[in-house]
Image (cartoon, rainbow, N blue to C red; front, side, top):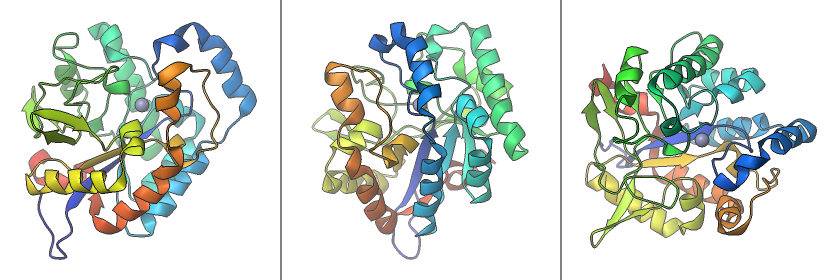
Length: 286
Ligand SMILES: [Zn+2]
């Protein structure tokens, strides 16, 4: 990515705009009904966190890409409009937080159309970018993925997680953006150390990584001309949000170090020049 005259490295700030119960852990699957009931009873206002995102980023004039879930757009339509009005790019995170590799191509088409419509109606334009819930696409199980995005008028995708983790990702995916079936694919940033790839800038990895490591990893990616990307979620801005009935290491990871998100984000907002994916790659995307 280009350096600006103020010598700050340009980064891509992204927010996966979903509610506190949107997570894909196998242990939660039998609990879907009680969780849905709890969501209704708690009436937690997640839009306070998207408003906090707007306010935080306004402190330094940063722009972001917000990948909005259809479920969120239906619950909080005004919040999506406020993100859009504040100058943030509105892209799609799908309709529900279902895993795409469990869908047939036809099911994905319906899912995508519903997700795009839910968001598009609010902002008066069709989103240009997409990110899969829980990075749930891969060449083997969803080989039709980019063709379907292209057919619905999308131009880029940010669902490439180029490191294998217990829950998602592919260790052999490219680190640099690339074209596939007419879709520009922009991978998440990873740190390469002695042949290993280390995630550090997204969700739980962002919360668990010390700030100097995040800063180092992002700067190194910038010097190498690779995407400099941070991925966060509205719930991570409020450590007091309701908890899912998770157990074991998945509970630890899902809720680890929530209180570090905002202070780290504040530092990074000052140290980098942040923008949306559509703006950063405007020339390539046309
Ligand atoms: Zn998500």
